[in-house]
Amino acid sequence: MDCRRIEKLLDSYLDRELDRDSAITVKRHLQVCGECSRTLDARSSMSSSIKRRATYYPAPAELANRIRTQVPHAAAYRADKTRQPRFRLPAWSRWFQLGGAVAAAVVVTTIATMQLTSMPEDQRIAEQVLSGHSRSLLTSHQIDVASSDQHTVKPWLSSKLDFSPTVTDLTTSGFPLRGGRLDYVDNRPVAVLVYGHRQHVIDLFIWPDEAVSDASRTRVFSKRGLNLRHWAVAGMTYWAVSDINTADLEAFAEHYASAR
Image 1: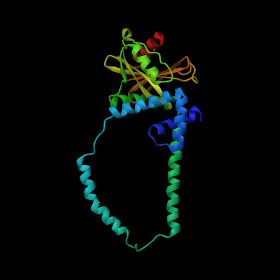
Image 2: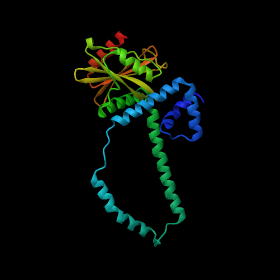
Image 3: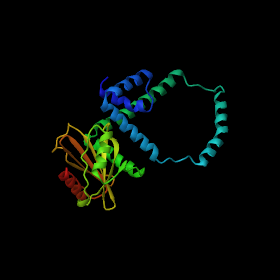
Image 4: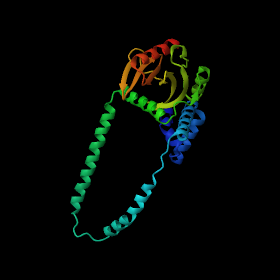
């Protein structure tokens, strides 16, 4: 089984949702494939971080009370359903109702699929980058390895990924390195370098993408109060996202590119 098929099974393998034969196949592949093993380690690390840092909200006591009050009504409803109804719809009528429900579900699913598949590639990736940035702020999980030393951040990220991102401290330019973390974008683990600018946070998402050219992918986006800048250099794609203004984000991108 090739790496692409194995990669699609890694999440299920990690969650122990595969059948016995599939799990054995994945396990044997991981024993001989270092790249897939590193991908699994990165996803496992990310899952553990989310479990440690995610905020959980217990159900309020009032909810349990409301459920208890509904139990007698539910029992009465079940008892009433056992009684013979005075009138039954013909069998063909029920089939028409079922057919209408199925047709409606097909229409809704088709529309949703068309909307997702018709979204331009850059916008689809931009949505994932925005979600990763916002999620890190909401869960207070912005950094896996906290350090302003690129010789600490780079080896840590490289050990978790199948590539080695360029890491540099830009303190003298007004963008100090705070650390790095792992994220998951475009169906693969990616590196995120975390920089500061005054009281703001800049996330720089990095991963290899041989399909993009250096010049054609320099783009600027603004969505939901956040600014993004996307560029590609030497087979690597970069997405910077922050709530700083576009001029400062442009300056950050230029300082990072010149320091590589």
